[in-house]
Image 1 (cartoon, rainbow, N blue to C red):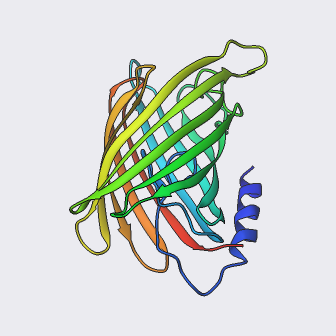
Image 2: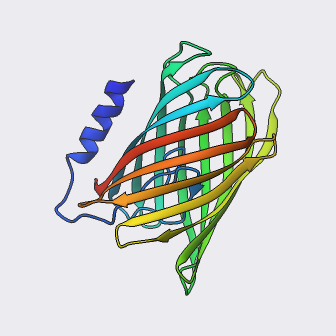
Length: 250
């Protein structure tokens, strides 16, 4: 699976042009945004983003920890429309020995923009049950929306999704639905450094607060670090660090 991911990325990168689009990062699942805060900055047509991050997760109610390497690719398929996907690899897992987690794929459509920088993005996604039962969520269908606006020096963002979960086999197991949400803001403290604060959760009882910093280096390259405190749910805390490259693809 790693070789397939690298091959796809190499093919897309081989079409790079001289112009470098603005750097950025991707949210969980592979669409544009910050790790725990989906955004409305959809990639332009033909632009490509490749991102990798390392997550250290401490689980509640046990001494178990996880070290996960999610790799994702985002591509601007059309003007105002992007697609993306993510493959997570469990490098170290105290509760299981399966390397591959649930693979996700999704799309985002910039539905509307308004004067002042406000925007609405409609999102859809699929989660495939390629991971470990009990650790990963299994098959899911996701439909949601993200909105954002600018207030003084802050970019405020909010997102909500309806999720239909089918476990390991959606054709045989009972379907369960729930909703998730995120709310937060981002602001530049210098020309090249952006800070992000967010809260996220779902109706199953998961809730957390996160803070992150993004350093925009050069030629579409950015690096970031994230700390999330789990106030409710299965995680005590998580620490993430990663890098992203944004350029011209096909």
